[in-house]
Length: 167
Length: 113
Image 1 (tube, one colour):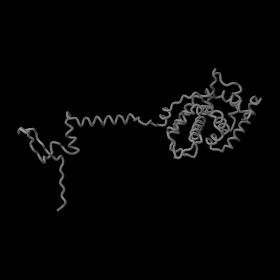
Image 2 (image 1 turned 180 degrees about the vertical axis):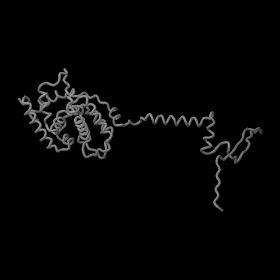
Image 3 (image 1 turned 90 degrees about the vertical axis):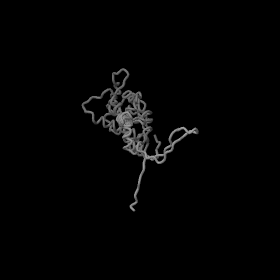
Image 4 (image 1 turned 30 degrees about the vertical axis):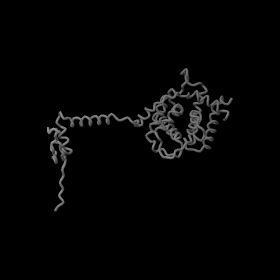
């Protein structure tokens, strides 16, 4: 992810390579942000279409993958913001028996929902995309130190809300 | 790694299980309005076919348009000016053909004197 390029703009083939190698992670993070598993697939397709259209605007001041993550995260946030507030979350849970989340997961979902957005995004990028602090910093345009502090604060908040996690 | 890391990861996995990658890159390109190299639009293909048909029609001797088309763009073979013509004969003296040098296009220029 740290590979940098010498020229401005991203080649179509490079974007396609990232899409093919990380698609499942992009979809998972999009699902976590939107709360909608089906919409997440659409969000990722739309985000990459937007990236393809604006690929010449990519400046080589950071990794291409971080730029693509930022596009997906922003598209997912926009999708969630457009959703009517009364609309219930739809099928974000993928439990094999289709019965929905366990009680602990429901508790965690509530805990995540009250986190500040930056903390929530850092948690999603860290655990669903397995990005390291440096990569998360590139995506969210913050410093790696801020990523560490934000994740620490999120852990503390989750620990307070989900007591059974630290037993 | 903090003590909460593993249980948090497990709970998050329950919350949003991993996806199986079922991507469709051609759908991305379609949404972006990008065509792959080597493919052309139906409109462009139709225009090329129409142009080819028009050329074939104009050049067809059966329609008598070929000569008119040639006349439009320049020389007409029937209006060539013979500059030199000679009969060709065999060694026995019988006629074998004709050798002709002709100009398909002549141009005169006056320099004002």
